[in-house]
Length: 117
Picture 1: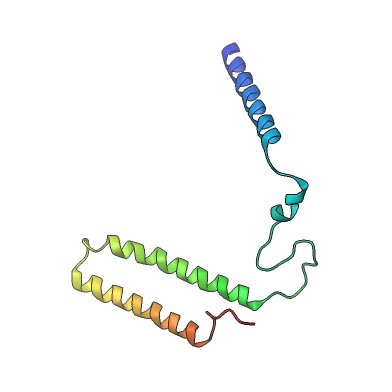
Picture 2: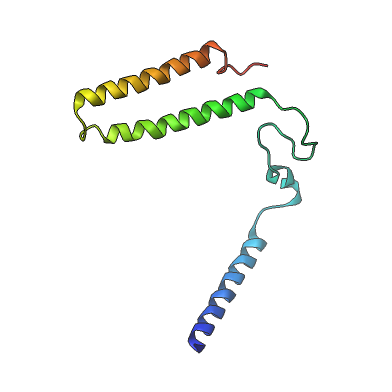
């Protein structure tokens, strides 16, 4: 029991020493306060939260999520190539990719991919 208390106190002392050295050697200053403040979706964290925001940020986020889910669905299709019948795999893959391309064409037609105000 004494050995456990001794080891835990040594670990706590060493970790505190490392944290203190890290704080002393860090290059952060008050000038970097602007860099450390959160900035997401065009919001200024020091202004009112009720200001309207650009709808384009929202659309880009939705497009990113859609493509992210698409990647998560395409990767297992690649690994299942040897496990399934080739004809069934090809039909399923082509159907899925055609649906993705139709969605991309629709986004392109609606000018969602252009960054204009």
